[in-house]
Image (cartoon, rainbow, N blue to C red; front, side, top):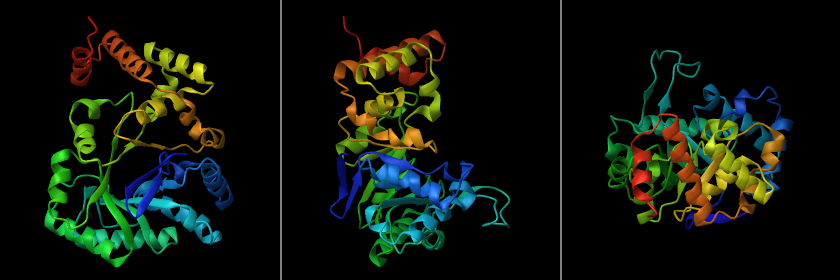
Amino acid sequence: MQRLNLSPSLEISRIIYGMWRLDSDQNKSTNHINNKINLCLNQGITTFDQAAVYGGYSSEALFGKVIKSNSSLRNKLEIVSKCGIINPSDRYPSVSNSYYDTSREHLIESVEFSLKNLCTDYLDLLLIHRQDPLMNHFETGDALDALIESGKVKEVGVSNFRPHDYSLLQSAMKNKLVTNQIEISLAATQGFTNGDIAYHQERSTNLMAWSPLGGGSLMTDEGILGKTLSKIAEMHDVDKSAVATAWIMAHPAKICPIIGTNNLDRISKIADAMKVKMNKELWLSSILQLIKQRKKNGDFHNSMQFWRNSYQFN
């Protein structure tokens, strides 16, 4: 498994295991979750993506029980978590409506909550989950710097930030934001055309891609694109998920896909993406088939128009 240095102090696996659905698995036993973790580690996948809000604020605790049961496990993992979302819940019983909170008080309290639930004394990486339209970038930036200085967080970054929001927060910080986690897949190609990926590639900031399989839609796609993915998969003796993941990883921005599934068989094959030789011809053929499919279905939005205008071969 390839590895990437997000900073001098933080190295992660090129593919990340996402735990958004951990709480939705019928089997939430410590032993079952431990099996998932070991299947990842056996493939060299050592980075695990969490968030305080996942599972109604319960997912981190499920993961933490496994860490607590095995004292040697923590040093084998890089744990990513996110903060900044307040939802009506048992944790926030007085809240009636969801909102974002990037205040110093909330960020520090949320990190303490995550550390307790994860049974660890530090996070490898903390992300602001979503852009808060009322973010005071000086306050938020100062809080993130303070969390790094305290040793409770090694590095910090963001999730779902547009370039202008990213620059705003970075301008108020001493430490560098090391990543931005955004939606990227063959079902969500807007990042390639709206400047998001180019912005971070220019700054040598490695992106993380959530929902790289299009929420599963790429696996069930039986149209032109689905047939193209199946053909490439057959060439490499893998399934379509490996091809869709390899398509993201082939980009020179060195994007790290986050794969989330509770199926043990699928988890055991996540690293199959490394077997796919995704050259420029295959990469572009996937986009061209996507253009044809979207046009046929009458779903030809602006980013698809950009792709069509950009790739003319006559």
